[in-house]
Length: 340
Ligand code: SF4
Image (spheres, protein in one colour):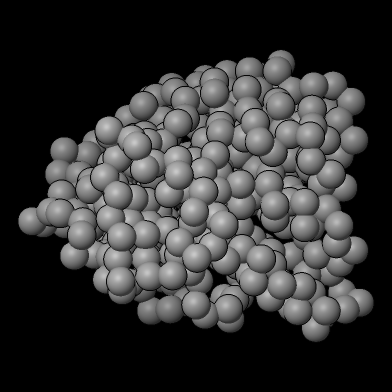
Protein backbone atom coordinates (compact mmCIF):
# COMPACT_ATOMS: atom_id res chain seq x y z
CA UNK A 1 0.00 0.00 0.00
CA UNK A 2 1.22 3.49 -0.86
CA UNK A 3 2.44 5.45 2.19
CA UNK A 4 3.37 8.95 1.03
CA UNK A 5 6.42 10.71 2.44
CA UNK A 6 4.50 13.97 2.41
CA UNK A 7 0.90 15.00 1.87
CA UNK A 8 0.34 18.53 0.61
CA UNK A 9 -3.09 20.04 1.17
CA UNK A 10 -3.78 22.82 -1.30
CA UNK A 11 -5.90 25.84 -0.47
CA UNK A 12 -9.58 24.99 0.29
CA UNK A 13 -9.05 21.22 0.08
CA UNK A 14 -9.78 20.78 3.80
CA UNK A 15 -13.24 22.30 3.29
CA UNK A 16 -14.30 19.04 1.65
CA UNK A 17 -15.14 15.73 3.36
CA UNK A 18 -12.53 13.84 1.35
CA UNK A 19 -9.82 16.36 2.28
CA UNK A 20 -10.76 16.11 5.98
CA UNK A 21 -10.77 12.33 5.92
CA UNK A 22 -7.32 12.16 4.25
CA UNK A 23 -6.02 14.62 6.85
CA UNK A 24 -7.39 12.42 9.66
CA UNK A 25 -5.61 9.39 8.21
CA UNK A 26 -2.19 11.06 8.20
CA UNK A 27 -2.29 13.58 11.02
CA UNK A 28 -0.60 11.30 13.58
CA UNK A 29 1.64 9.43 11.14
CA UNK A 30 5.34 9.36 11.98
CA UNK A 31 6.28 8.52 8.38
CA UNK A 32 4.32 11.22 6.61
CA UNK A 33 4.85 14.97 6.73
CA UNK A 34 1.76 17.15 6.38
CA UNK A 35 2.04 20.46 4.56
CA UNK A 36 -0.86 22.90 4.51
CA UNK A 37 -0.76 25.51 1.77
CA UNK A 38 -2.54 28.82 1.43
CA UNK A 39 -1.92 28.63 -2.29
CA UNK A 40 -1.54 25.96 -4.95
CA UNK A 41 2.25 26.35 -5.26
CA UNK A 42 3.05 22.71 -4.73
CA UNK A 43 6.35 22.35 -6.55
CA UNK A 44 8.43 24.44 -4.14
CA UNK A 45 7.59 21.97 -1.34
CA UNK A 46 9.02 19.00 -3.19
CA UNK A 47 12.81 18.85 -2.69
CA UNK A 48 15.39 17.88 -5.32
CA UNK A 49 18.29 19.54 -7.13
CA UNK A 50 17.78 17.95 -10.51
CA UNK A 51 15.17 16.18 -12.60
CA UNK A 52 16.04 12.73 -11.21
CA UNK A 53 15.80 13.66 -7.52
CA UNK A 54 12.70 15.82 -8.06
CA UNK A 55 11.13 12.87 -9.85
CA UNK A 56 11.84 10.49 -6.95
CA UNK A 57 10.58 12.90 -4.31
CA UNK A 58 7.56 13.81 -6.41
CA UNK A 59 6.60 10.16 -6.69
CA UNK A 60 6.46 9.96 -2.89
CA UNK A 61 4.19 13.00 -2.66
CA UNK A 62 0.43 13.06 -2.44
CA UNK A 63 -1.24 16.37 -3.27
CA UNK A 64 -4.82 16.94 -2.15
CA UNK A 65 -6.54 19.63 -4.17
CA UNK A 66 -9.74 21.02 -5.62
CA UNK A 67 -10.23 20.54 -9.36
CA UNK A 68 -10.93 24.06 -10.55
CA UNK A 69 -11.53 23.69 -14.25
CA UNK A 70 -14.45 21.39 -14.85
CA UNK A 71 -13.97 21.34 -18.58
CA UNK A 72 -13.04 17.73 -19.30
CA UNK A 73 -10.40 16.83 -21.89
CA UNK A 74 -11.52 14.62 -24.74
CA UNK A 75 -10.07 11.12 -24.85
CA UNK A 76 -10.27 9.72 -28.36
CA UNK A 77 -10.41 6.97 -29.51
CA UNK A 78 -11.03 4.85 -26.40
CA UNK A 79 -13.53 7.15 -24.65
CA UNK A 80 -15.37 10.45 -25.07
CA UNK A 81 -13.87 12.26 -22.08
CA UNK A 82 -11.20 11.94 -19.45
CA UNK A 83 -12.65 11.82 -15.92
CA UNK A 84 -10.30 13.92 -13.76
CA UNK A 85 -10.46 12.20 -10.38
CA UNK A 86 -6.70 11.65 -9.98
CA UNK A 87 -3.63 12.80 -11.91
CA UNK A 88 -0.15 11.28 -11.70
CA UNK A 89 0.95 7.91 -10.40
CA UNK A 90 3.16 6.55 -7.65
CA UNK A 91 4.83 4.03 -9.99
CA UNK A 92 8.28 4.50 -11.47
CA UNK A 93 7.99 2.61 -14.72
CA UNK A 94 11.03 3.64 -16.70
CA UNK A 95 9.23 3.83 -20.03
CA UNK A 96 6.11 5.61 -18.68
CA UNK A 97 4.35 8.09 -20.98
CA UNK A 98 3.71 10.32 -17.97
CA UNK A 99 7.45 11.08 -17.83
CA UNK A 100 7.03 13.19 -20.94
CA UNK A 101 3.49 14.44 -20.23
CA UNK A 102 3.75 15.27 -16.53
CA UNK A 103 7.55 15.42 -16.26
CA UNK A 104 7.61 18.50 -14.05
CA UNK A 105 4.66 17.27 -11.94
CA UNK A 106 5.52 13.69 -10.99
CA UNK A 107 3.35 13.77 -7.83
CA UNK A 108 -0.08 12.20 -7.49
CA UNK A 109 -2.89 14.71 -7.10
CA UNK A 110 -6.33 13.68 -5.90
CA UNK A 111 -9.36 15.90 -6.35
CA UNK A 112 -11.60 16.30 -3.33
CA UNK A 113 -14.57 17.86 -5.14
CA UNK A 114 -15.66 14.54 -6.61
CA UNK A 115 -19.38 15.42 -6.36
CA UNK A 116 -18.85 18.45 -8.62
CA UNK A 117 -16.78 16.37 -11.03
CA UNK A 118 -19.53 13.75 -11.26
CA UNK A 119 -22.20 16.42 -11.70
CA UNK A 120 -20.19 17.76 -14.61
CA UNK A 121 -19.95 14.21 -16.00
CA UNK A 122 -23.75 14.04 -15.83
CA UNK A 123 -23.98 17.27 -17.86
CA UNK A 124 -21.73 15.75 -20.54
CA UNK A 125 -23.87 12.58 -20.55
CA UNK A 126 -27.06 14.64 -20.93
CA UNK A 127 -25.58 16.67 -23.80
CA UNK A 128 -24.90 13.53 -25.84
CA UNK A 129 -28.21 11.72 -25.27
CA UNK A 130 -29.44 9.34 -26.65
CA UNK A 131 -25.83 8.24 -27.30
CA UNK A 132 -23.79 6.62 -24.53
CA UNK A 133 -20.88 8.64 -23.14
CA UNK A 134 -17.70 6.87 -22.05
CA UNK A 135 -15.31 8.34 -19.46
CA UNK A 136 -11.70 7.23 -19.00
CA UNK A 137 -10.39 7.37 -15.43
CA UNK A 138 -6.71 6.69 -16.09
CA UNK A 139 -5.73 8.93 -19.02
CA UNK A 140 -3.12 10.77 -16.92
CA UNK A 141 -2.91 8.55 -13.86
CA UNK A 142 -3.15 5.19 -12.24
CA UNK A 143 -6.02 5.88 -9.84
CA UNK A 144 -5.87 2.61 -7.86
CA UNK A 145 -2.97 3.07 -5.36
CA UNK A 146 -4.63 6.13 -3.76
CA UNK A 147 -8.09 4.55 -3.68
CA UNK A 148 -7.76 3.38 -0.05
CA UNK A 149 -7.40 7.07 0.91
CA UNK A 150 -10.09 8.57 -1.33
CA UNK A 151 -12.76 5.99 -2.21
CA UNK A 152 -13.09 8.02 -5.41
CA UNK A 153 -13.24 5.02 -7.71
CA UNK A 154 -15.83 3.38 -5.51
CA UNK A 155 -18.11 6.44 -5.58
CA UNK A 156 -17.52 6.89 -9.29
CA UNK A 157 -18.40 3.26 -10.03
CA UNK A 158 -21.57 3.63 -7.91
CA UNK A 159 -22.46 6.79 -9.85
CA UNK A 160 -22.06 5.03 -13.21
CA UNK A 161 -23.87 1.98 -11.83
CA UNK A 162 -26.96 4.20 -11.54
CA UNK A 163 -26.42 5.78 -14.95
CA UNK A 164 -28.37 4.76 -18.05
CA UNK A 165 -26.07 6.29 -20.64
CA UNK A 166 -22.75 6.81 -18.87
CA UNK A 167 -19.90 4.28 -18.92
CA UNK A 168 -16.61 4.32 -17.06
CA UNK A 169 -13.29 2.57 -17.62
CA UNK A 170 -9.80 2.64 -16.19
CA UNK A 171 -6.61 0.63 -16.26
CA UNK A 172 -4.16 -0.21 -13.50
CA UNK A 173 -0.93 -1.95 -12.56
CA UNK A 174 -1.95 -2.16 -8.89
CA UNK A 175 -3.98 -4.43 -6.67
CA UNK A 176 -5.62 -2.14 -4.07
CA UNK A 177 -9.04 -3.06 -5.37
CA UNK A 178 -10.74 -4.71 -2.41
CA UNK A 179 -12.90 -1.61 -1.86
CA UNK A 180 -14.29 -2.02 -5.38
CA UNK A 181 -15.82 -5.43 -4.82
CA UNK A 182 -19.50 -5.65 -3.81
CA UNK A 183 -20.57 -2.50 -5.65
CA UNK A 184 -23.69 -2.14 -7.77
CA UNK A 185 -21.68 -1.46 -10.93
CA UNK A 186 -24.32 -2.89 -13.27
CA UNK A 187 -21.66 -3.66 -15.84
CA UNK A 188 -21.15 0.04 -16.56
CA UNK A 189 -17.49 0.09 -15.47
CA UNK A 190 -14.81 -1.78 -17.36
CA UNK A 191 -11.63 -2.51 -15.39
CA UNK A 192 -8.43 -3.36 -17.22
CA UNK A 193 -5.10 -4.55 -15.85
CA UNK A 194 -1.79 -4.01 -17.55
CA UNK A 195 0.25 -7.19 -17.46
CA UNK A 196 3.75 -8.14 -18.41
CA UNK A 197 6.32 -10.86 -17.83
CA UNK A 198 8.12 -11.08 -14.51
CA UNK A 199 11.34 -10.02 -16.21
CA UNK A 200 9.82 -6.80 -17.63
CA UNK A 201 8.06 -5.94 -14.38
CA UNK A 202 11.13 -6.46 -12.23
CA UNK A 203 13.48 -4.63 -14.60
CA UNK A 204 11.43 -1.62 -15.63
CA UNK A 205 8.20 -1.27 -13.59
CA UNK A 206 9.59 -0.06 -10.27
CA UNK A 207 7.15 0.33 -7.38
CA UNK A 208 4.21 -1.36 -9.09
CA UNK A 209 2.36 -4.53 -8.01
CA UNK A 210 3.90 -7.86 -9.00
CA UNK A 211 2.56 -9.93 -11.88
CA UNK A 212 0.92 -12.40 -9.50
CA UNK A 213 -0.71 -9.68 -7.36
CA UNK A 214 -2.19 -8.09 -10.48
CA UNK A 215 -3.54 -11.43 -11.68
CA UNK A 216 -4.98 -12.14 -8.24
CA UNK A 217 -6.67 -8.72 -8.21
CA UNK A 218 -8.04 -9.25 -11.72
CA UNK A 219 -9.56 -12.56 -10.66
CA UNK A 220 -11.41 -10.80 -7.82
CA UNK A 221 -12.63 -8.11 -10.24
CA UNK A 222 -13.82 -10.75 -12.72
CA UNK A 223 -15.59 -12.66 -9.93
CA UNK A 224 -17.28 -9.40 -8.93
CA UNK A 225 -18.85 -9.37 -12.41
CA UNK A 226 -17.08 -6.37 -13.94
CA UNK A 227 -16.34 -6.33 -17.65
CA UNK A 228 -12.62 -7.02 -17.66
CA UNK A 229 -9.70 -6.48 -20.00
CA UNK A 230 -5.94 -6.90 -20.15
CA UNK A 231 -3.40 -4.67 -21.77
CA UNK A 232 -0.25 -6.64 -22.43
CA UNK A 233 2.20 -3.77 -22.70
CA UNK A 234 4.78 -2.75 -23.47
CA UNK A 235 5.85 -5.98 -25.15
CA UNK A 236 9.63 -6.33 -25.34
CA UNK A 237 11.17 -8.76 -27.80
CA UNK A 238 14.05 -10.16 -25.76
CA UNK A 239 15.62 -13.65 -25.77
CA UNK A 240 12.97 -16.10 -24.72
CA UNK A 241 10.11 -13.58 -24.99
CA UNK A 242 7.74 -16.02 -26.63
CA UNK A 243 8.04 -18.59 -23.88
CA UNK A 244 7.63 -16.00 -21.12
CA UNK A 245 4.61 -14.26 -22.67
CA UNK A 246 3.02 -17.67 -23.39
CA UNK A 247 3.50 -18.64 -19.72
CA UNK A 248 1.92 -15.36 -18.67
CA UNK A 249 -1.17 -16.03 -20.81
CA UNK A 250 -1.41 -19.63 -19.58
CA UNK A 251 -1.18 -18.56 -15.96
CA UNK A 252 -3.83 -15.91 -16.48
CA UNK A 253 -6.19 -18.35 -18.15
CA UNK A 254 -5.68 -20.92 -15.40
CA UNK A 255 -6.65 -18.44 -12.69
CA UNK A 256 -9.54 -16.67 -14.43
CA UNK A 257 -12.96 -17.93 -13.32
CA UNK A 258 -14.89 -20.02 -15.84
CA UNK A 259 -18.12 -18.91 -17.42
CA UNK A 260 -17.63 -15.14 -17.36
CA UNK A 261 -20.70 -13.33 -18.63
CA UNK A 262 -18.62 -11.12 -20.93
CA UNK A 263 -15.60 -11.85 -23.08
CA UNK A 264 -12.16 -10.86 -21.80
CA UNK A 265 -10.81 -7.98 -23.87
CA UNK A 266 -7.15 -8.02 -24.94
CA UNK A 267 -5.03 -5.13 -26.16
CA UNK A 268 -1.38 -5.78 -26.97
CA UNK A 269 1.11 -2.94 -27.50
CA UNK A 270 4.76 -3.31 -28.47
CA UNK A 271 7.43 -1.09 -26.95
CA UNK A 272 8.13 2.20 -28.72
CA UNK A 273 9.77 5.48 -27.75
CA UNK A 274 10.32 9.01 -28.98
CA UNK A 275 13.65 10.83 -28.86
CA UNK A 276 12.19 13.25 -26.30
CA UNK A 277 11.09 10.39 -24.04
CA UNK A 278 14.46 8.68 -24.40
CA UNK A 279 16.32 11.83 -23.32
CA UNK A 280 14.12 12.24 -20.23
CA UNK A 281 14.40 8.54 -19.35
CA UNK A 282 18.21 8.67 -19.57
CA UNK A 283 18.25 11.67 -17.25
CA UNK A 284 15.89 10.18 -14.66
CA UNK A 285 17.17 6.59 -14.92
CA UNK A 286 20.82 6.90 -16.01
CA UNK A 287 21.40 3.14 -15.54
CA UNK A 288 18.31 2.02 -17.40
CA UNK A 289 18.54 -1.18 -19.42
CA UNK A 290 15.57 -0.24 -21.58
CA UNK A 291 16.36 -1.24 -25.17
CA UNK A 292 16.52 2.13 -26.94
CA UNK A 293 19.13 1.72 -29.68
CA UNK A 294 17.74 3.77 -32.57
CA UNK A 295 19.64 1.77 -35.19
CA UNK A 296 17.84 -1.42 -34.13
CA UNK A 297 14.41 0.11 -34.65
CA UNK A 298 12.29 1.50 -37.44
CA UNK A 299 11.52 5.21 -37.31
CA UNK A 300 7.85 5.95 -37.86
CA UNK A 301 6.70 9.50 -38.49
CA UNK A 302 3.88 10.63 -36.20
CA UNK A 303 0.93 12.84 -37.06
CA UNK A 304 2.05 15.72 -34.83
CA UNK A 305 5.47 16.18 -36.39
CA UNK A 306 7.44 13.96 -34.02
CA UNK A 307 8.16 10.34 -34.76
CA UNK A 308 8.74 7.22 -32.73
CA UNK A 309 11.07 4.26 -32.80
CA UNK A 310 9.16 1.02 -33.14
CA UNK A 311 10.25 -2.57 -33.76
CA UNK A 312 10.96 -3.52 -37.40
CA UNK A 313 8.17 -4.76 -39.66
CA UNK A 314 9.44 -8.37 -39.49
CA UNK A 315 9.57 -8.25 -35.70
CA UNK A 316 6.09 -6.75 -35.45
CA UNK A 317 4.62 -9.28 -37.88
CA UNK A 318 6.12 -12.08 -35.80
CA UNK A 319 4.79 -10.54 -32.57
CA UNK A 320 1.29 -10.08 -33.99
CA UNK A 321 1.14 -13.64 -35.23
CA UNK A 322 2.40 -14.95 -31.91
CA UNK A 323 -0.15 -13.11 -29.74
CA UNK A 324 -3.01 -13.75 -32.12
CA UNK A 325 -2.34 -17.50 -32.18
CA UNK A 326 -1.69 -17.82 -28.46
CA UNK A 327 -4.67 -15.78 -27.26
CA UNK A 328 -6.94 -17.60 -29.74
CA UNK A 329 -5.68 -20.99 -28.58
CA UNK A 330 -5.63 -20.33 -24.83
CA UNK A 331 -8.80 -18.31 -24.13
CA UNK A 332 -12.29 -19.39 -25.17
CA UNK A 333 -14.36 -16.30 -24.40
CA UNK A 334 -12.27 -13.31 -25.52
CA UNK A 335 -11.95 -10.42 -27.95
CA UNK A 336 -8.59 -9.26 -29.28
CA UNK A 337 -9.10 -5.54 -29.78
CA UNK A 338 -5.75 -4.81 -31.40
CA UNK A 339 -2.12 -5.88 -31.47
CA UNK A 340 0.20 -3.05 -32.45
FE1 SF4 B 1 3.26 5.19 -15.62
FE2 SF4 B 1 1.40 3.29 -15.39
FE3 SF4 B 1 3.86 2.89 -14.46
FE4 SF4 B 1 2.25 4.61 -13.26
S1 SF4 B 1 1.94 2.40 -13.40
S2 SF4 B 1 4.41 4.93 -13.72
S3 SF4 B 1 1.11 5.48 -15.01
S4 SF4 B 1 3.27 3.21 -16.62
